[in-house]
Length: 102
Image 1: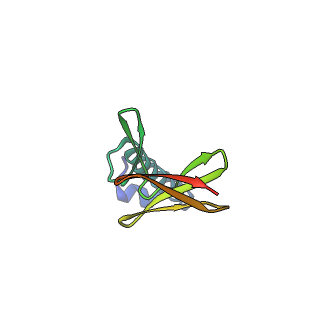
Image 2 (image 1 turned 180 degrees about the vertical axis):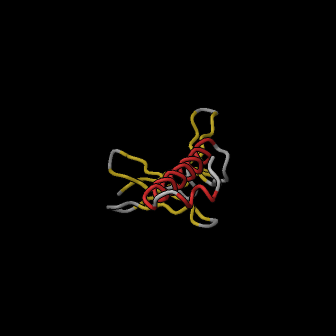
Image 3 (image 1 turned 60 degrees about the vertical axis):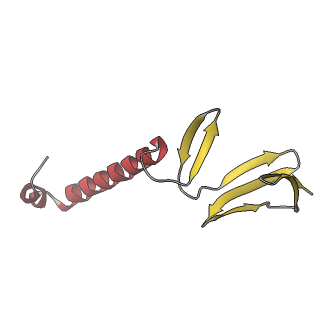
């Protein structure tokens, strides 16, 4: 690691390149924490019993035979949309429902 004094003696292009690399490294470290579950998130993908974190408020797209459904967390609510057509919600119990595209 170089000192700040050494850094300031470098040509401007070298300082810019080092700053760019530092920013790239910080961004990669944040992304690694996010996908490894080390950062806070409200969105996970369940694979059997394994919970895999996704970036917070991710849009999750489901492909059905009649089209696509997109869902995401919006504050304290689940927001579900379809790009085309309409949603038909069919309750199955007090804590579940099916979504059909019409």
